[in-house]
Image 1 (cartoon, rainbow, N blue to C red):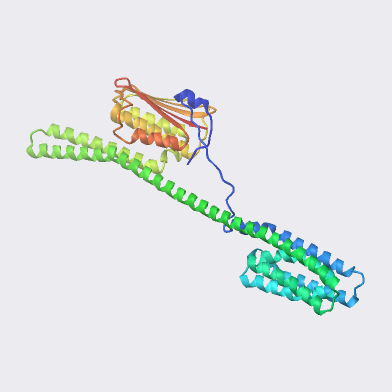
Image 2 (image 1 turned 30 degrees about the horizontal axis):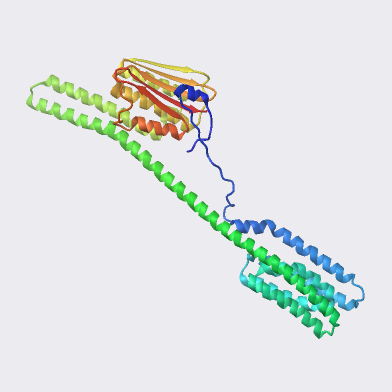
Length: 425
C-alpha cells in the first residue's frame, strides 16, 4: 500500500521530521476487453451513419428537383440511390472501420460500383453521393485498394456516360467533378489511414503500459511476500529458535543432574527455567500468529488492546506499567490499527527480553492530523547507531512506512529507550 501525499505538523512535532507521499492515479486506461482504437470507432460510428444519411437525402433531393430530366430517369436514379442506402445498411456499416472480415468491405465496394454507374447514367446529379462514398472506401478497405476503387468508380461512371451518348460538355463537367472528388477522397483517405496508424501505435503503447504495470504489480507482490517472509524468519530466529535452544539445554542439564543425583534442587531450578522459557515461547508463537490474524482487535478497540498489552507486561515482569490515552480516540483503518498494535507489541517485547526495566510507560495521543504512539522504559538502553542484531526494530520501521507513518527510536546505554510512531489520519 502506498500512502497519499500529506502534510501533518503533529507528526513533525512529535518526531522532528516531515514526510511527503504521493500516489499517481491513471484514469486513461482502456475499457476492459476493448482496445483503444475499437472504442474510438464505436464512439464515432453514429456520426458516419448520420453523415451518410444526410448526403443520401441531399442527393435524392437534388435528383428529384433537377430540371430538364426525364421522369423515368429520375425514378431510376432515385431507386439506384436507395439501393445504395440499403447496401450500406447490409454491408457498409460492418465494413466501416474494418471491424468485420476483409471480404465484407470488398463486397460493399463492388456493390457500390455496380449501383453507382447506372445511377449517374440516369441522372448526373446522382454523382453528389460520391462525396460520402469516397471516404467510405478508405474506411472499408486498405489504402491502395481504396485508391484503385475510387478511380474505377469514376471511370465506370464516365464510361457509362460515353456509352449513353452524353454530350462531351456533360462528360467534361463530370470529369472535372470526378477529379475533384478523387483528390478529396484521396486526401481524406490518407488522413484516415494516418489516424488508423497512430491509433495502432497508441494501442500497442497502451498494451505495453498495461503489461509493464502488471509486471510491476507482480514484482511488488513478490517483494512484499519476500519481505514478510524475511521478517517472520527473523522473528522466529530471534525468539522461538533461541527459546527452543535454551529449553533443550536446560532440560539436558536437568537430566544430567537427576541421573547423577548430585543436585536435585538445581535440576528443579533448571526445569523451572525451561518451563518459563517454554511459556515465553508460547507467547511469542501467539504473537507471530497474531501478526497474521490480529485477534486482539477482533472484539475490542485499539486502545483497549494496547491497555491489555501494557497490563500483561506489568503483571508478567512485576514492574510498573502505565498506559495513558489523550485526545478523542478515532476509528482508524484496519491496516493502521494492526500496525500500531504490532508496534506496541514489538516495543514491549523488547522490554521483556532486553531492557531489564523497572517501569514502562505507553502513551497514545489522538490529534487532528495523526495518531502518536510512545513507548518508554527506564532499562539498560542501547546504542541506536550500532548495527541491529535482530529484525524487530527494522521490521517495525518498514511496517510504519507502509502505512505512511514515521518511526523514531531514541536510546543510550544506561538511559532507557523511547520508541515513537506517528501515523497520519
